[in-house]
Amino acid sequence: MNIINFEMNLFIAVISIYFLSFIFYIVYLIFPRLLYKGKVASSLLLIGVILHTFLIIIRTIETKHPPFQTLYESLSWFSYSVVVAYLIVEWRRKVRLSGIIITAIAIAASLYAVIGLSPEPKPLPPALQSKWFVWHVVVAFSSYAAFVVAFSVEIIFLLLGKRGERYGLDEKMKKLFHRMAYNLILFGFPLLTFGIISGAAWAQEAWGGYWVWDPKETWSLITWMVYVLYLHAKVTPRWVEKRASILNILGFICMIFTFLGVNWLTRLLNIPSLHTY
Image (cartoon, rainbow, N blue to C red; front, side):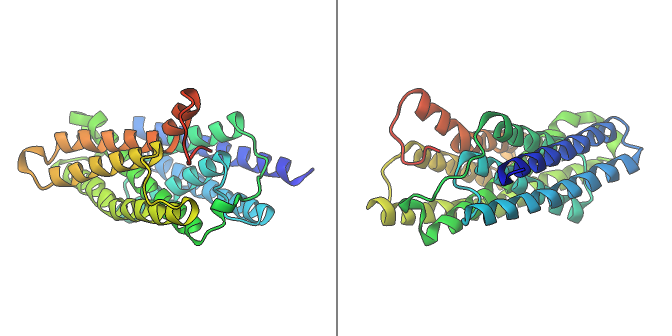
């Protein structure tokens, strides 16, 4: 068995464990009194992320560079980052309800990588042989992970609505959910800001210009502006809850479009872009 086949089998094993975790999160959501189901879901997710760590280490050794050059690698890193960020939040806050959203997103991203993309590694082009490569990508994906977890918390809160009492979500817990989403975005926003700035510095080094209004640059700025509006809304009394929640969801949509949608759109419409995978 060659290394690529081994990687693919390991990735499929990771996805399978994420899926089992997803099932247990569903059971926990339906029967919240079965607390052990939530613990099983969390334990499976932790096992999955440990295996995913091994997968990333193997990929790094094989390619001899950080594993986020191709879209296949980036999707793997994205799902890994999201799950790690969620597990940290779950461990700190002891809130498992949004695990169903997180596992669904991680599974979708991973399946797209395994089914829709080639796992074959590629040599780093000159533009990526830069000190900015690792800094820019790791920081940007860390911000994405924070935004995804914030989105998952918001969605669960909105979906449960008045049924929140069944899950122990009294007014105090509802405020905690809003605070969690706010803190996650407050954490992710400076990372996104640094990601944009480091990307501009990298562009100057690689292509001789800080900003050329490339589609991905433009949508990164749009995403940044949406989260600026969200943070402003959180200190505006009339916008502090549901309207701010809408901006949280809109920010997530813009972020996903920046990550994936721009790539699809530029290929579909044959739009020149420096950031196409």
